[in-house]
Amino acid sequence: MASAVPPPPDNSSRFTNLPSEASSERVRSLDKEKALVDASPAPILDWSLLSLSTALGAFFIQMCSYGYTTSFGVYQDYYTQYYLPDQSASAISWIGSTNSFLFEIGGLLAGRLHDRGYFYHLMIGGSLLQAFSLFMLSLAKPGQFYQIFLAQGVGSGIAGGMVFIPSIAILSHHFDKHLGMAMTLVTSGTCLGAVIHPILLNNLINGPLGFANGVRVSAGLIAGLMLIGCLLMRTRTTPPAEHVQFLVAARKCLRDSAYIFAAIGLAAFMITFYYPLFYLQLDSATHGLGKTFSFYSLAIMNGSAFFAQMFAGMLANKFCVDKMITVASLGTAVFLFGMIGIHTVASVVVFGVFYGFFGGMFLALWGPIVAFLTPDPAELGVRLGIPGVLFAIGGLFGPPISGALLTDKNLWYRGAIFNGALGIFGTTMLMIMKVIIDRRRHASAAA
Image (cartoon, one colour):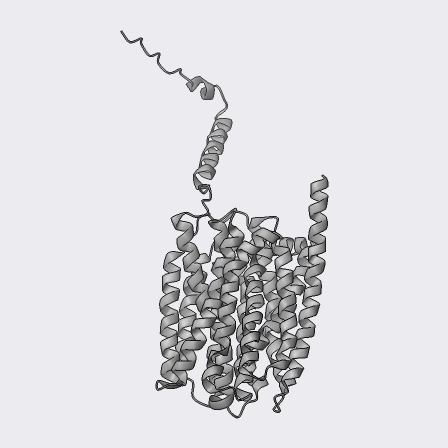
């Protein structure tokens, strides 16, 4: 016969004997603790279906935002030779540099809004604006600089700034141990886009469709891929009740010497990075290397960058991200000097393969190195956005300066020397960053 189960003890006296105010305070405290527990996200599973779908969506966003910006060399060549023949190469480059400036400067604001829980607002709004801006670009008339500048330089630049940083920062919701690898794989979408878009654009706008219809086809592709990207991405964490104050986070950055040198090195790289992207196709065309080959010069460089980004994460995990990004910076600087020797098809191919490899590796690792230098994940949006300001300044002034050095006589060696020297300076800054990081590692090991 089963034994009788004793009735539960009557605990009502525990509360009835307390003052009513203390009792209600205790109940509110318990409710608050329960709400916090319920709101806490589940443990991060790096390779779950949700994390993979978010990474794929972010990959598409990267392809259609920065991947399109880095394809401006196609437009630079077309505008210079056909659509805006009355404008100098330096003046035309202001369209692309303004796009990159707004793209990068918008990252600071977008990073803050992402940290406050406005991820979906940024992604949907930025995607719609990107598609709208490109459709407006298709309506621009030949010789109308201001129409192209407003649509491509301003509109598309703002749109890219809204989506780029959040599409990287969202990965911290889904990846922990393999966050660096996830970032490198997602940012490889930039280089894949920079391969696809130049091939597509060159064949469309120089083919039977012409500029207007060719840009519309490109805009339709962008709109479709960004829609898929928005549908695939999901957040996991709720925005914090108390947001990280920007000034507080910025002061912490200024006290971090490794972060300061890293930011300077990243900014120097960005000034030089746009020189081949904007001018390599024009360089090939002016050297008489054939119209068809010139069309594919950017695709060769960006194709190499894509494969570099695919392997950058594994190399960073094996040799440390601070070491690999320094090597990548040095490689880009050396091959920028090598642009002086571009006169043949073979020289363009060699330059494109090697510069693309090192440049792609750098692009894949700048996000992980910032994440590596970020002690508090809540500040990641701010820390990713601050280099964006420096990137913006470099992207705004770098291409026009290179265009001014080029002059109407196409003195290509001037731009190569200027950008190569600046690349060496940036590499020096990253070397100092690495020395500081190594000292911290040794101090931590000794402790």
